Image (tube, rainbow, N blue to C red; front, side):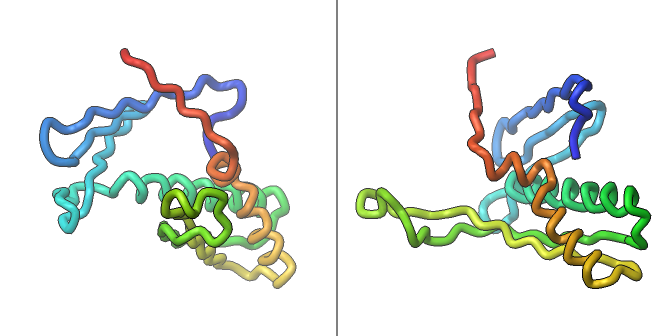
Length: 148
């Protein structure tokens, strides 16, 4: 769910490979490896960049649902989120004649364990749509790039 609004965001440091795709990531003392699958020339030493993106969305979804259920003292025992990313042809496209139009689609399945009634389950699925990472992904994002 990210940092509290008053907390300074931690920088994510990424060191790219001299060759291949294996990339080292460090954030707040945590070390991660990002790579590509063997099928596309990577060494499969870690998740791909898109898999990392999905992991962030899935983790945020699970955390958001945990927080919501805990505040209401609902019997949510565990949340499991399964995600897949795909690109599909965009049906409604302004510039379709000029270039092929693809749209990113994330398929998310939320599994809720616990003695929840149907109304609670429905509300939790509604709340899943409000997780902060999803809100960011659905907004206009500005990436500022400069030389360091």
